[in-house]
Length: 471
Image (cartoon, rainbow, N blue to C red):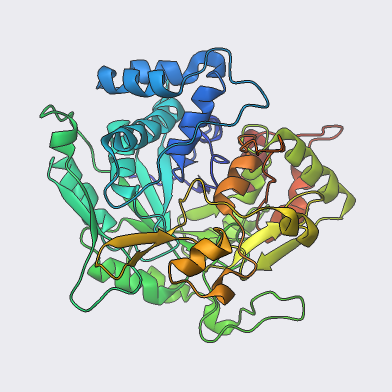
């Protein structure tokens, strides 16, 4: 196939929304939606009243209308909820989720991909985090029902995903081994999904998407190419300057005077070894500037993946006020990004933009009362009775310790679930009628986003990014 030269990154929770992905796809490149927490995103969009009727349009095209009607009736609020009314929460994802949550997860992923693909034949992909395992199987199925062309996955070692997609195409039951902490010898835990049972015996025709693994080293690329359960179709080679979660440095963790992880020569991917695998790859992390695409092609890549530049264009899901702040600070040369080694409950370093009044400020973070009401980054662990428990380093400390967590593991951890929802104007309303504070992430190149502005403009579009990258 003819591969796209530009892949738009699948960022955050709802930052890479269907509107952005559709815009990029219409311009001839690979638009990517974020698959993280789409069940919660859909439920909250419905409670906001489905402005524009887009969700209704996707629901009307879902192959199982009775499921769509159940979800609609459960979450839709005509005209939108009152501004001071909290969002109705969805159940926690788990190894054995209730049927209603499975239906919501499938439908949410279908909806996002369907809307991104609507009315054109361009390429659309979806991005998942390997660390967020429990919704993976129904999420994959929902995206495949909508005809997703590419599945991208990082933040872990997704060896099982290619084979799982093969099985889903055949209508076979699938299972995914869960990374469970404190497991006793010989014990294993799985999440499961049966597509034929879910569909009531009427499985629509599915096409297998291309699978692109997001990696940071040639060693991981070789492992995935040789030991995955199915065929890996390519790689996105992501450097430590990319936004969101970064791979930890190789070897012992050392910090700079500012408290950021130190990356060295060992952390640079060996592109010659990756190229020798014979699979297409794209370079990511500080490849969002003119000339970088040419450089990537010269190095043997099929193109580049760019996230940060797209994150602040008009079509992205980032709250408009946050976009304006970032663009103005970029234009003034007064923007800083900090690679926080402890912010994310996943344990991966996480890039944070310093923005006044957000959780990037220690005093704002200190004022937030810890709560865990979404749970996407909970870690499964084996309890004393042999069953699975769930804990998060960002949940209330006494709860985390009661579940066997070490207090020092919770220090500095931030609730990314709630913060990232706040980034896209879907923050929860708290008991004191305040809204959850955002925590915005971006790659190091965010300091340059004002360069995408046309003369006299205060915002830019996805087309401006692509035109500049292709220049």
